[in-house]
Image (cartoon, rainbow, N blue to C red; front, side):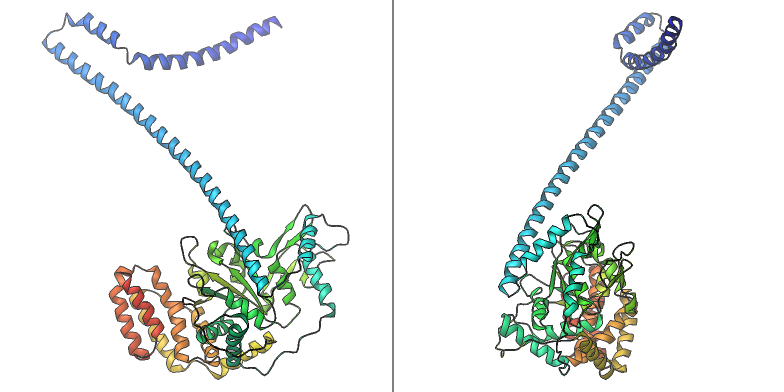
Length: 507
């Protein structure tokens, strides 16, 4: 054993000794390059025997050596400086991340306060949630699932409540124009909200062309109040989903399966979706301040599904597989979206929000509410029991009776060619289809065909000009304004012309 220990010491001494010699030799060698006394001693030793040429070469050698040492020092200086900069940048980034974290925390606190204030306002307007049920539901979500209990507590509760459901007596005689007038008068006389009749017509007609409506404009113009009031009007309260900056995926809308409790934590939105499958009522869900988070993160799946031509394909996967005691309308873990629900997003375009992408705009219908309502007198108006089937029947009848004229369709086609040639933008089949669906219903609501076309062109096509370099197309815009007058008449297309004129003034 003693022999082995001696062997091990000698054996490892060779390795570590060489390693230390290499490290120390490198350090000693580096220090030795700057041993000025040694250089001076060597120079004195040989300089006595130098001739003329030797002196010249010796001086040149000294200069080159000084330059080489200077370069080495300079490289070391640069390396140290770069390291200091990188380190400083990393520290700055950490400080910025900490600051962003603090700001996000403040945003969440402000959003919570906003929700509290909104809840107070909602309560004042007549909505009184059952607080005991809410507390019970929250308690259920936190406790582990027991044998025989449904993992979808809220949806199963809807199943129980709907066992004795008696359908309402719906009004099947009302027309679209009457709905617009009644809703406007209801909002005025019952809720103190004042909207132009054009806004109401756009809102109702939008239901016929898309499932996603975007209300945008400055704060305080009644964007959230419009769909909220409509829910009161049809006696089916609107669901309000306050979008948070932290929303990143679809679970914010539907909820998620908790592996620990074995429960599905359902959102109020999913609960309302499930409730909608039992009735013919019209349901609305407000995505309040929808662009405070990126819409594509949490609503991308909905955008794709609602584009499906067959409603039988409007299906989302909630859980991987079905359980025997799942709710009636959740089959094999899949839920079919209700046909009678529309989604209304409110959007502010400022520094605190994200820009809404073309993908979202193309699938939605934006309605601009930029002015406060003007007071007017309205008669007391009763509520309306509205069936979504009757509403869609009126939409179909309007599309058959008020088809966009061939003359205007031809003009739109010609305008499309003009825009492609001068601006490299195209209308697209989706937008043309929305125009064919929207304009006839807008006419049935009391508007005119040319105004409906004008609105779609201004808000679906010309809006895309904002993504172009306006400085280079300023003169082309002037030509487009003149071309619109030539095609549709000087007295028409006022909204499109006004929008183009505003773009020109930006440069």
